[in-house]
Length: 232
Image 1 (cartoon, one colour):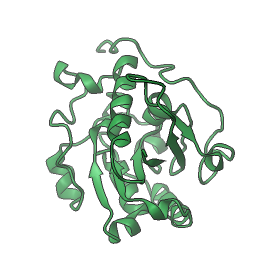
Image 2 (tube, rainbow, N blue to C red):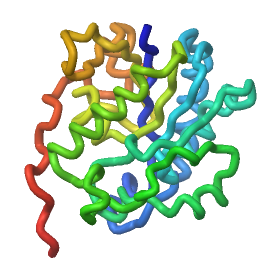
Image 3 (spheres, rainbow, N blue to C red):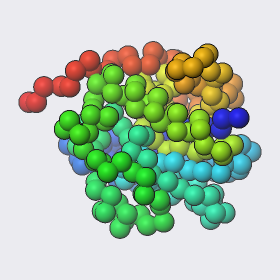
Image 4 (cartoon, one colour):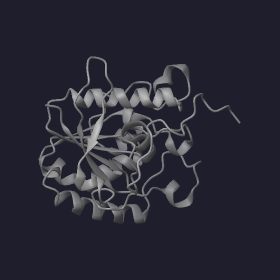
């Protein structure tokens, strides 16, 4: 039986507040830290989150800060937290490019970084092709990320990621800062068929677990470029 997924978008970060996308790997704002408190309370009160057996986070500063500020109570119970480059954000703007693992591991110890792709944080070279900002790369990365979770033994997994990747690569749903949604894997339609998620009614109907997010759906891959943007 594949796991149930609790997909979380990080709280407000500096680039969300200022719209300055030149900030490299931004941290949470004061409002973002306040949002973490509300998200933490919401997750603690969710019986499904209480059953989580694994936490996956994008290795970016804002997602790690959100994870540590909202599911710390799971970590204190012994639930493992693991970084995975597949769950990073879509674009190659500075705000969506991570810091080296040496740097984040020094800043945020206690997270398992051992399985982070060695190419991290490269998103533009041929070696970093898996993370290119194209429709084909992002949708393929999403499928790879889902396959890894589908094959895991845990029954409930929390994933802390980013709005663009969650919306356009994984779910088709909007995620506002510090909100979450719950999904099950849909039945596979045959060998080689894509991995698909079906959202729990409890988070779909009210626009997220905390009700912050839009209820409209979008097509996976929509608005993503077919080719890498030309260098300016």
